[in-house]
Length: 91
Ligand SMILES: [Zn+2]
Image (cartoon, rainbow, N blue to C red; front, side):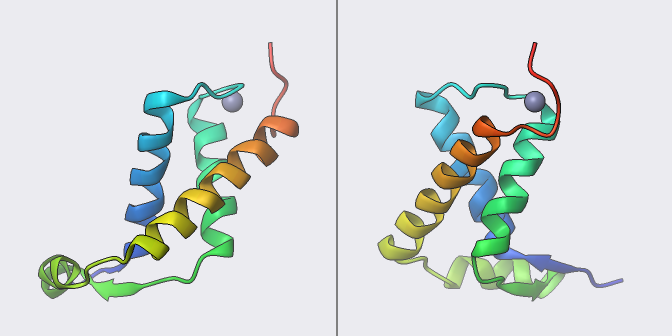
């Protein structure tokens, strides 16, 4: 079976990991990280591809610095939003 994957999702996941290397979230639980990804992904254009061929295609698709900067900016904005109103109570 072929699977549809969103390349933007990979990029957002990577951007969040990069962000977490140097920053601490108010809460870094799985739910908050998923909320951050959902918020960022809703603002960014999706880049779907079909998995098997797509895994190779993503290597051709060189992401511009602007795209990376935009993705990071949206991740940071989502981090701030989730930090301000997390979907669960912070201890
Ligand atoms: Zn949390």
